[in-house]
Amino acid sequence: VQLVESGGGLVQAGGSLRLSCAASGRIFSSSAMGWFRQAPGKEREFVAAIRWSGSRTHYADSVKGRFTISRDNAKNTVALQMNSLKPEDTAVYYCAAHLGSDYIGPLSSEYGYWGQGTQVTVSS
Image (cartoon, rainbow, N blue to C red; front, top):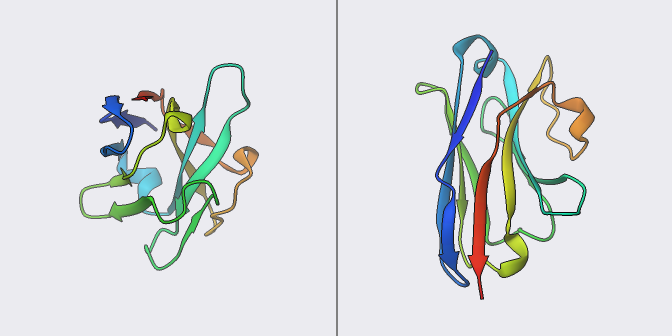
């Protein structure tokens, strides 16, 4: 069971980044997937989530209209396209999986599998 994020980096405000998360097949095919982030000195917060079918998504208000979550079940990947980035988006971004239902809510305790995180830094 493994989730591996990639795509983080340093970008100027207003720029874009695309994060990707590669998942092992056993969990990906029956998992809702989510992205969370944690800034220094702050609690981990929900960013976005997507049902296993991709039919429904859920976003935090702070990223709605700027970020887009998507998944490719054939490749066992989930992506987070981040546009119009702001300095306050700076954080470590984590991919997470929820097994057993199509929960796409914001509770981190509902996600049983986590990646190691990838750093996103937005300069002003």
